[in-house]
Image (cartoon, rainbow, N blue to C red; front, side, top):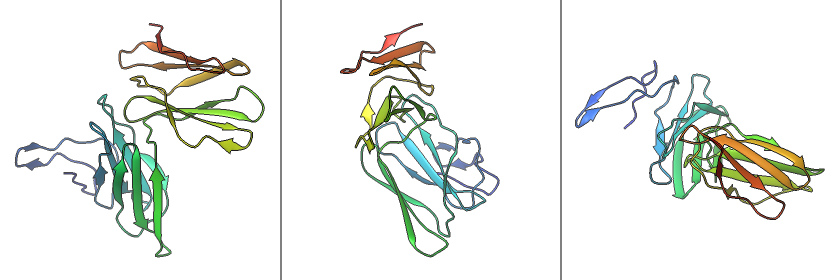
Length: 195
């Protein structure tokens, strides 16, 4: 159950317990919630500017900040899921048309990217499951899916490249240690704890 007074989330007693305040956000619509996998939760609502906003909770007990999804809506948002990492959100726009947004990857970190050569970009982010995800652009074409690179991570990845076909990615794990993963040009190396 999510309560959305105009002043933000406030504690509210109900049978069986007390609601917990989720920080940030001032909303003009009810909050729509969805879970696409065990121990995940995604919230959607309209801000005072009528734009869509999103917040997520992952299996490592971390809430993301509220992220603007843009748009100007004249109806409440509704969300549905039909599989792991698959979320569809719908709302009515100012033109009275139905607007839709689909995610097949939801992130709790800022995106990061690097290029190891002409016509190549590699993009990384941390999913709501705490794993790192990767997608690449090569010679005018994006890879079709987000590649799950594993890990149980907290911070946005920091990718670097020191030569063609070579990537090194650094991030902070749930143990507060620095973790490293690398690409050799033909395969990903395993996660290495650097301390």
